[in-house]
Length: 172
Image 1 (spheres, one colour):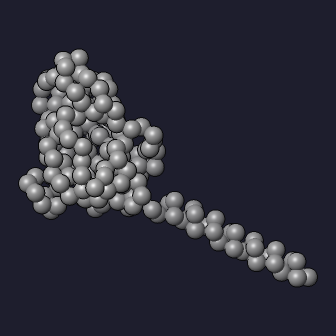
Image 2 (image 1 turned 45 degrees about the vertical axis):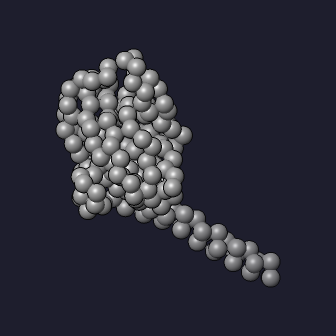
Image 3 (image 1 turned 120 degrees about the vertical axis):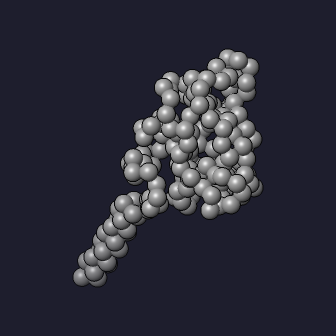
């Protein structure tokens, strides 16, 4: 009888753990209220965290990092709470608007990383693209800032469509 009692308790505990796991998976992603409507939780769930940004040379001699022949950035690596200037480059884009969503892997916090000025309150999601430069079809300069160290995914949307995602480690 005691074996059945222990088995019953084990099954209840196991079922509770599995229910918490499912619940956590369904509720761990909380989109900010002001995020563009085309950013979906499924996009975030499907991030390939092994898709690391790589350094590459555009065919014009400009050293960049990102995803070759898709998204290239000229600028310094990020440090928490430090505003940096990045020049974004895009290949295979026919004008429009860039939206960048930053996701911290360990905290699952989601932020706009584009920033006006120096204040965290000056963050925004989207920016218009300009014309050709450094061998890319389109580009745009921006200030960027990350609030905390960790592994970050940057989801880049062009005209409301997910264009590319890349991952970077942000260190203190």
